[in-house]
Image 1 (cartoon, rainbow, N blue to C red):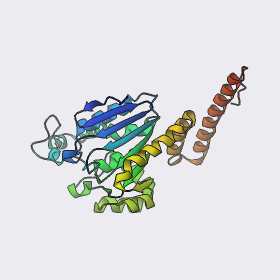
Image 2 (image 1 turned 135 degrees about the horizontal axis):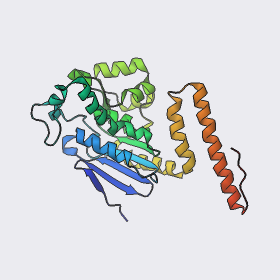
Image 3 (image 1 turned 60 degrees about the horizontal axis):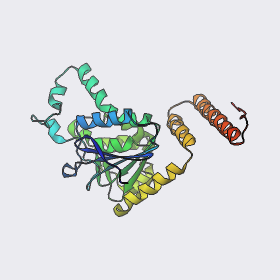
Length: 273
């Protein structure tokens, strides 16, 4: 049976198929330009994610993943139903920071979900589009991809939580150069620098993502759920803390494994914790 899609936002389509959730940016006529209400919907979706979901795919309709912030948001006549960025800018810095923090949830919350998040990226992924791709755990890109941070051309900086994963992937010097110049990063450079896991011809993007999803879903669930936070913490924690996290996770997994083997044998499991 084909899953019935839901629409938590007019430009967002969500489909559930068992342990897989597919989240699609669905405003191709505007190259999936983003607005604050879309960021709210993305944040709410991540915050309410069913624990039974093991993999989330972030994808987009049309030739481009996302052109970034809808530029009309910066005009005196903003998108209907959206806050005026000019009015936001006129508020106190504290009020503006609070609003931006809410916007950031659409990007930061994906790191906290237990599911592995995969971004399937084609064409342009600019500004907020690039940062949404960076919010995923894994990235599969098409050979026509153009990743770019263009915020500095507007006199701004990237502020949707994309800088940390960008620096982790390419290092501070290259990250500074990418953001300061606003240049595009193509598919080959994205793979070579760690921004993408793999690049494939555009026609093969969906099939490649499907193969990756199948591989992830075939991994024992408990191990995969334990692995994601361990990998993320390894990039930020000191060695002592990280190895503690690893032994704690392993002890829990071994305990559960022993319990399962004991139950399967018809007798009490022996704890190794």
